[in-house]
Amino acid sequence: RPFLIQQHDLDSLCSTVAALQEEVHTQKVAGGTDAGEAVETVLSKLVQDAQERIIYCTLLVLRDDIENFHPTTDDLDYPAKLLKLRDGAIQTIADPSGSTSAQGAEGSAGDGGAQRA
Image (tube, rainbow, N blue to C red; front, side):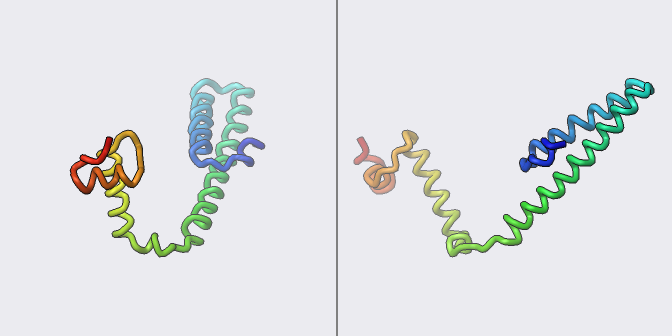
C-alpha cells in the first residue's frame, strides 16, 4: 500500500492494477482454500486502492494541466506554430547532422544547399 500512495505515474499505476487483477483472477481459478480466499481478499483491496489512486492522479492532471492552463501568445498563434514545426522538420531532413547554424539554414533554403560544406 505505501507504494501505491507514493506513486504518481499513471502508467505505473495502470500496470500495477492490471497485474493485481491478473493475480485476483488466478486466485479465483486456482482454488477455494481459506488461504487462497484471504489472498484474494487482500489483492482485491489493493486493486481498489490502486484504482482510487489512478482517479486521484487523473484529477490532479485535469486540474493542473487543463483547468489551470493559461495559453501564451505562441499557443494562441497555432498556424504559426505549425509552420514553425514544419520548417524545423524540413530543416532536419535537409541537414540530418543536426547542425542548426544560420549558414546551414540559408544554404538549404536559399540556394539549394550550395553554401553548406
